[in-house]
Image (cartoon, rainbow, N blue to C red; front, side):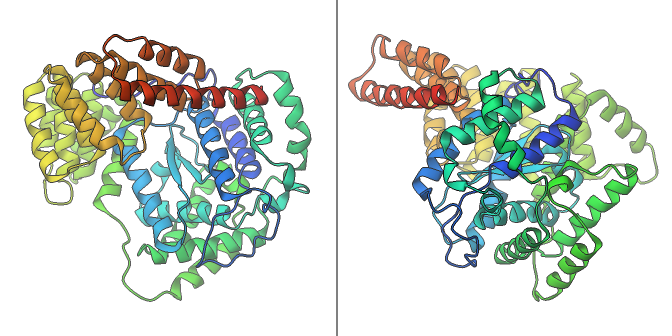
Amino acid sequence: MLYPFRRKSTLETRSTGRTGLGFCLLFLLLVPLSVANAHLPNIGGPASTELSPAKEIELGQVLLTEIRRRLPVSDDPELIQYVQALGTRITSGGLDSNFPFTFLLVEDPSINGFALPGGIIAINSGLLALATQESELASVFAHEIAHVSQRHIARNFENAKSFNVVSALTFLGALLATVYNVDLGQAALMTSQAGLQQAQFAYSRSFEQEADRIGMQLMVSANIDPYGMPLFFKRLQKHTQLNRGRLPEFLRTHPLTLKRISESEARARQYQGTYAFNSTDFNYIRARTLALSKNPTELIDYYREKSRTPQGLSDTERYTYALALSRAGKHEQGLYHLERITVGTDNRLKVRLADAQIRLSMGQTGAARATLESLDRVYPGNLPVTYYLASSLIREDLAHQALDKLDRLSHGYLQHPVIDKIKARAASRAGMPWRSHESLGNFYAAHGQYNLAMEQIQLALQSPGIDPISKARIETLKIRLRLLEQQREQFQ
């Protein structure tokens, strides 16, 4: 299989319509907190002053585990790296803050995005697929970041002082129970009912204007073309017209008017200069999103027919076609189409990574490793390169080398669960069971599965050959897991 890292969603029901409503409510109820900011105007009011930045970060981490546990968050290394890099580029350009933003891609075809306390910003794969320019996608991120920084949702609550870890988890649990038919118990649903009734179902015009204005400032500070914002508004409007007036879920919480579009165009004209409009990375990431989210058979049929037309296939279309072919088990054909892509400085990494992934799927581990090692010399510390290189090293019984690569990478990605999972494989093959169990414990904890995480920690502490430093580190993790379990118990 081409993408062994991709897990199937554990959700029982994924109705697009209900998902949209749930995300709308989720966005409205869970974005009340502040971000320390020296450049942007602080006009959010005192609604969220009861919660310190440190407590907000703690709240965000708890909510992040629930999001990973309940939603199909992408674990594709290339998508993870791109989404986080784009979001970080925007926040680092105009926010004078050490606040740890986390950017996620949710595998859902509906056009939506949401934000949570603690700086968690997520977009659906459907929204990424709709945007045709990187500046359009960046405008969504910038807009959501502005909503968080200005505490717009907190100002929708009559008594924001009561908004804490327990209430936030209760809101989130009730919403996900409604959207995905996940049984979280009637207590959570009943507790949140009053809060749900207080929520407004859309941002006010003034909030949207403020988020548009500040979001555009963030784009400009990050050297991203501000015209991406009105362009994306127009794309949403066209999508609505083509779908017979059915609003994308994003517009149910972000009302769009002709005046708002014209205002964003006028605002964009005020910024003079040369800005980045698009990037090759975006083109290939969008192509990858299509390849991983659509039915491979349908993609193959579509691109086969298009390849026979006079215009043929573009390089990014051929990339999508190659990945779809490999997903369908037609690896040789996939390699054939990759080899027909014109490779240059901008797309070399994406194309060679795809080549290595297909060869790993074919069992050509040596050839894949040679490609990945050459990429590693040019792109040290790159998440997808390190991930696939570690996979090839594990297959060739070089697990110690794989573990060394992953250890160096994990410092930069704050123990991302994708790294934890493959690190567990590497440690097991390297004859270090305590490290394997520890990594699995971190993986389960990141997805809110604390019972499974604690089982792995106990196994780690009981492993023969464990050294004193590792034992002390794992004991500390055990204490942290107990605290997280206590927070969950308060919620349930």
